[in-house]
Image (cartoon, rainbow, N blue to C red):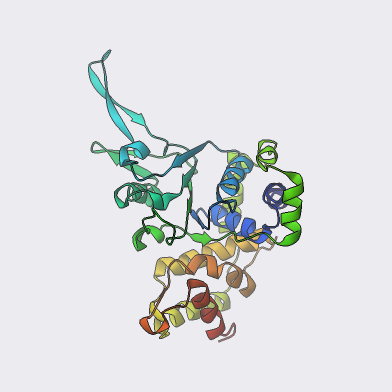
Length: 304
């Protein structure tokens, strides 16, 4: 099956990270955008490159820095002496897979240039709206906000990402294999596309056909309702967050080779979907998003 081949190919490049690989694939198959947050050197960029290669799509990397301008991302108009008129030169955003590397090192003005593109799959420059390619995926990486030289992403931009994941340190066996195998760039260069654009579109269409029974929708509604009523949350999940949870659960079910969603699918993707959307209440200071996600799961029974 194609999804097995995708997971297997990525496992050969990023060692010991199959859960994170499956979450990343679920995000992209659900037509979402992915945010990868972790310390430098943990494999964020490597995973992003590998995802682009196995999907067989046009790829552009944008290195976000403090002096990057919106026009450097979107593109700008230049004067053409031959025609005597201005013409628009597309920026790196006009690709099918975008790696927005270290997105939180750019200023908020430049970060906001991605907002319309991620939500509407289009950009507006010089008063003209231009469509972006289809499919269009943004895979953004960021360092923790405790790192120097970072600008935290605003909540409106965080909400544009279907999922946020962390890679974490490798387990001892994977790290030993990594040390023996040397540079993973060679493995990345050998990576061949597993699907083409048509194959990817078929997988995305298959995600939308995954069945969701009414009791499963009831479970999702209880989770969302608990996030809005629970005293440990500053504010609850929005309707968009609820839809994101269901979309991601459908994709996870497809990766598990099922045609219907079960509660375990929701539980598997919930931390990645909600951790960047929930905020702790003042009396819960010190608890991270992961702790809140686990409390949300613990506070809601599967059967109402």
